[in-house]
Image (cartoon, rainbow, N blue to C red; front, side, top):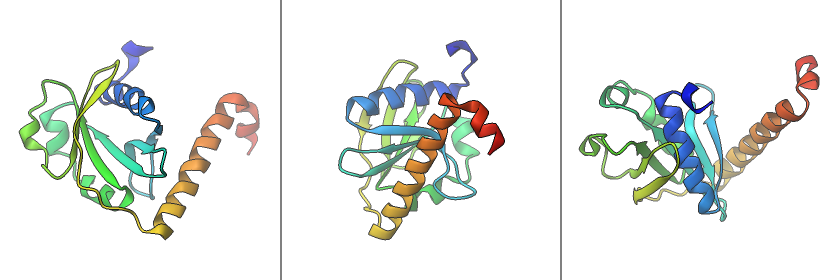
Length: 147
């Protein structure tokens, strides 16, 4: 199974493992709003949202045109890259995580920009609904086909 993962998915795996060790729950490929899809959305123990974009190469980063749209959907924004990535390309006000398939390390935190209460509530409900639907697809895939 690990051999079937794309480079960004490998980074996301290490990121989610690391964030879990800090008390976060995560969803990969989470759409905070229609038209955007975060590589990793993490909900922390105090209700904070971290959004992590995984970039596997210079080209992957340079061709990403949507990342700025994610900033209004999290309290903190992070880039996750591998140890060989040229990190000087990444904005300094964003967080930085170095990851591999097994774990990750938070190198720096990003600028904290707390979500408005109304947006936090809507995002929390969307996150919970997405998590519940994913679990239901696993535990009862036949019921989900008929829905």
